[in-house]
Length: 127
Image (tube, rainbow, N blue to C red; front, side, top):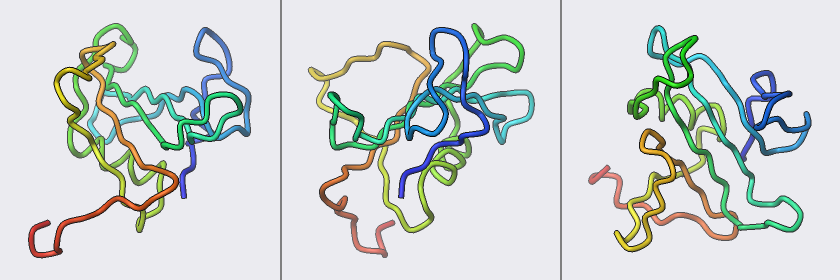
C-alpha cells in the first residue's frame, strides 16, 4: 500500500500541499549523513489527474543547501521505498525508451508502481 511521510510534508512555499492527502512534496533526512531527500509523491488517484501509477521522485540535497544536489544512492532509494510502500509491495525504477526521456532535473530518480496490475518479477534465483 502506498503512503506518504506525512510528518515531512512541505506546508508552505511553491511545493506546499494540504495535510492528509496521499500526494505532495516532502523533505526528510537521508540515510547518508549530511544529506536530505526531497520527495514528490503521487498515489495516482488525485481527482482530474488519475494516472493509475503510484510515483515518487527523489532528489538528494546537501543539508542546508537545497541548490546543491546529487543523484540518490541505492541505499536512499531503498529507504524511500520502505517509507512509501509496504515491505511486500514491488516497485520499480524504470529506464524508458530514449525517445521518451523527460529528465526535467538531472539529479532525480523515480520509483513507480502501477495501481491496476502487478509488476511481473523474474524468478527468485535471478534476483
